[in-house]
Amino acid sequence: MSERSNRIVFVSGLSGSGKTTAMDALEDLDFYCADNLPVPLTPQFLDLCANSTPPIAEVALALDARERGFLAGLPAVVAQARERAAEVLVIFLDCADRVLVNRYRETRRVHPHSPGGSVEEGIAVERALLAEVAGLADVVLDTSELNVHQLREAVIRTVAGEGAPATVVNLVSFGFRYGPPPGAELLFDVRFLPNPHFEPTLRPRTGEDPEVAAYVLTSDRSQALLGRLVDLLGFLLPCYDDEGKAYITVGVGCTGGRHRSVAIAEALAEAVRTLGREVNLSHRDAERQA
Image (cartoon, rainbow, N blue to C red):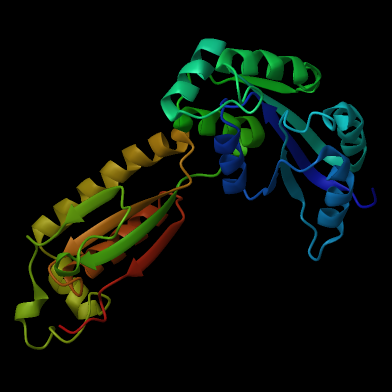
């Protein structure tokens, strides 16, 4: 191996323990993720990452016991990685047998180490195969009592610590006439606010126009709404941080998505940014015909 990388994370564990969720969490932390790479190819792969342009500084590799013949070489690979990287972390995901059995029964999947037998037999075989890998682990996470959100949070906190990224707010204005944005966690209906559509001089413009925004925002009702929305997001966003949620989508809707929702979304975005949050703002329907 040549150049030094910044961070390398190895993720292993029992089938059904949550490796996919763990790797998704690492991907959200901007790690370059590779799943089930054969252990003998790992040094070459890490060299390619380090020597790419620009270098890939943070790499996560998922390993499992389906590579029976290759796992014996893992200790040497981890030792080499520790020589070439500023930080190497081996995470092993464990889980109680009874929970694994239930998960397999719920999904009706066949255990990879017991395709013709019982899930219990497959778990026993896999535990034996992964015993040495578990012994290499810097961190063992027992996922028996964790749902996918809690596991994701545990992985993010393990890897990022206090540097875990804050939840990003994707703020979208829209018109109910065209349907709400798909996948939005929060939707706010502002159709009760003063409507510039009925003012001939304002109708052709959008809520980004200062005069339109002033028409919408100067009422007591609008100011009260904004204050309550900021307070609500101020409460919710730290909760989403604790859950390890990468982003939330917040929709603000009026009838056509051109005036009221745009003005409120603009004002809300500015207020949320003062809370120290990254906000991505878009006006989905503002340019549709009034």
